[in-house]
Length: 74
Image (tube, rainbow, N blue to C red):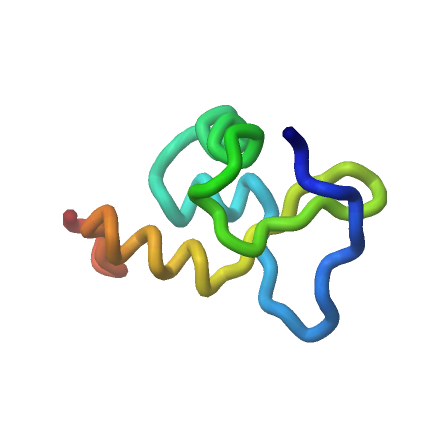
């Protein structure tokens, strides 16, 4: 089941699929697959144009869960 089309919440720090993939060190296709399956990206929304946006806080949580550090190690 896909997420309902709705605009991003105002004032929330949201990332594009490309930005999310870069932050997690994976390909865009992986992020799109995870988004399509649901569950991994809490709070992700689709814009009225159909583009995904992922909350930066969720990406930070996933980076910590995966052991990704800011210095590129991990």
